[in-house]
Amino acid sequence: MTQRRRIGLLGGTFDPVHVGHLALAAAARDALRLDQLRFVPTGRSWQKSGSGVGAADRIAMVKLAIAPMPGCVVDEREARRAGPSYTIDTLLELRAELGPEPALVLVLGSDQLRNLDTWHRHDELLRHAHIAATQRGPHRLAGFDPAVETLVAAHGRDALPDEPSGSIVFFRMAPVAVSATAVRALLARGERPSELLPPAVLDYIDRHRLYRADGAA
Image (cartoon, rainbow, N blue to C red):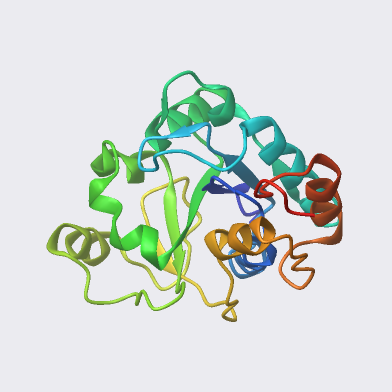
């Protein structure tokens, strides 16, 4: 029996996209057997006060970063959406475009899963997608707040089922010690953290002089 198509969704500001994002995408693609993984850069994230650079630059950097990664594409809908970006709106749009059959899989770090009950209309997400989470930094995949614990208890599965939505699964990835905040701080000091950024992204940042503090080389 042929498995239904699986489309992963990895959202974030990607400000800038770094090796940790790419490692997460590759781990999710392989562990969940995704046919496609869509990077979904946010426009105006309702949970963040602002980003370092505009959406056009962030999208351009993601496209450069994922060019060598089979099955990975950029979905620009949230960056083009007026007003705050809500994941539930993205899922509803995708269902309208793709229909009910494909499996949609929200790929989250453990920090995001732990805060899931703060998301807009979070109780509707599993009607339209699965959630796949992995450990990120010190945030464990255990000891959740009651609302999230209830969701995990009701919808947790050992593996992603061949269904379009409705399950929460965990997957493993090797830890990658990097954050966009730390990368931006290095860049603001005029450093070139080549071990943390794909070469094409670092070249783009240099060429457009992004994230540089006044007077930095």
